[in-house]
Length: 203
Image 1 (cartoon, rainbow, N blue to C red):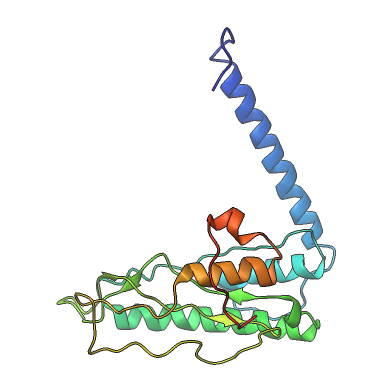
Image 2 (cartoon, rainbow, N blue to C red):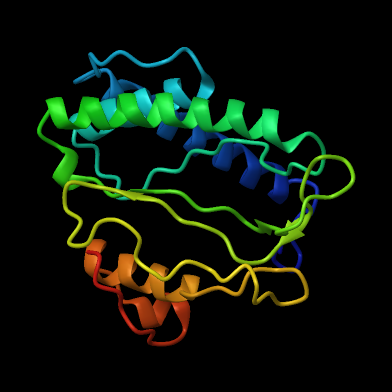
């Protein structure tokens, strides 16, 4: 919000210019850092593969960043789910497999926690278009050399006990985020999440 008496047509432009300048400067810094110790791993020629190779290079360069984020989509499979999921999971499997192999070769697998999440789940029953509609509960996958627990971390859902056609979740995602914030990132989870949540034991 511009200060009273200021030229309203000038201040937003000035702010945007400074923001763009900082963004370009940050992008240039990150690019240069990623070239300091570039990944020599073999990655698939996909957007996810390229992104994970860039992240591996940044990790190897010890850039001062704790969290990296990439996305893969679309899993919003209302139509023709089987073929689309096969393609997406193959892309994920190939890219993540190359990323893990790269981290292990550099002895950095114990330093990295890789996990997946989705903004929503899917319904259990297939719809008339060979897909599934928006649901509630979903899976999260964790990969790291530093995991204290491996395999399934909760009981399998009961397909005979649904909530209006949706799976009933076994673990609250806030417990997962609280665990990662506290045990992995060393952050104050209460300040970030607004409450204390029971920690899980996988890290």
